[in-house]
Image 1: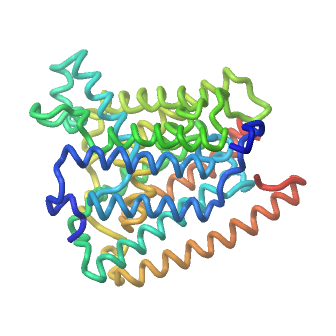
Image 2: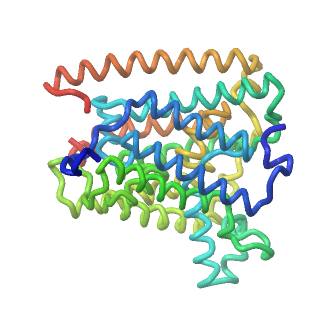
Length: 178
Length: 200
């Protein structure tokens, strides 16, 4: 905020190499303190597993995927590293956005697509990511970033495929962005 | 000795406080990078703004160098750091889905939470999509569980797989990142000239 609070224009984004260095140090702190890295899709998996088990407990208990996120019945499944971490992500993103005047209710899109179509694409993209994150055993945070830094073989394979697929498809969805 | 949690320096309950604090730092840094904005993220795939590559590779080599260094000086037991086992083919297939979701939706899961918390409606809708995708995965997994568990390779790193030393692989990764940074800076200049405006 500038003096007098008059200038509320969004500030420019930070230097990407400095951001990358900071992100790397956050990840390293997680490795050194907790012995594990960052993740994002895991928290949603927990929420989905709990939701399914509330509606259909029998059905959920027979599914290996849900069982993994529900754990044994001794502890609340939401008392989980990834769940608390994603709550932090929401808070941290909001704090940074407030400090830089970048919090704004809007839809991010290119000039050549309607809001409605952009939101449809957003839902479809989220669906692919959700499915892919489970198939790849982690998303960009868990595989590309965390596994990448660990020099994990499967993570590097997934990361390279992510970039290849996104570049391969970019031309066909360009109307959404350009 | 690190990782501290594995040596019982603190309880499981306190680890959740740490998770929350690390999450705040994670979200804060992602927002600083512009990753709460789908247009910035998507620009990576049209070569006009290479922030995704620059931030990701800088973060990866920073943390990778840290892991190597702390192990080398004997402060960290790397074998106690959790990493996912490799299931090569399902992970490559998963990567294709992740790449499609990234360019079609404009976010990855982590960045979509930052985008939603800074008011982006597309980010909120994207998160609903993630819930749906994971639900579909959960419901259909019994149909392809054999495939999902195929090509298991256990806990394997690039240096295990190639037989090279940890240090040498790290050095090659750092070289590759530096090359990628140079190419990204060069590519952005070309695109800026072509579009008649700067990358930002």
